[in-house]
Length: 108
Image 1: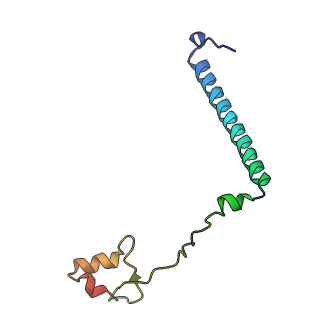
Image 2: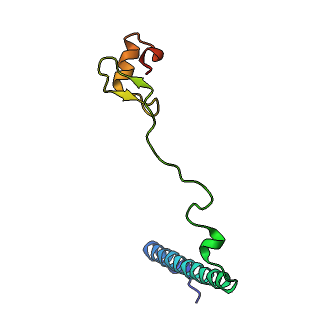
Image 3: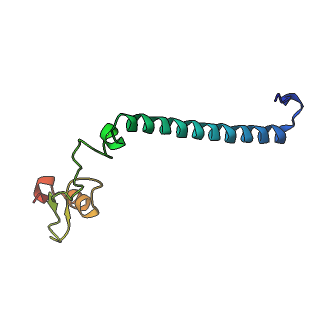
């Protein structure tokens, strides 16, 4: 199916390009699906499971707790305000530094 692109106007050419890209995406998805099926068949034929071969989502590596970090600095004007020293500095911390305090003065 040869298409003479020299006779197409701008809109027709864009439409052809879009259709070709959609078809290319469909072919890629089909190929990936077939490859996935082949891999699953090979794994099953050997008597293993996908998790045995590729592991779980993060097998072999411990998960990070994602817990909170202990605070390192406390606002002397309001002891309820603390900062861990990570991320953006809080306004009270910057104000205290501008007022002449040092980081070690604010440390817990």
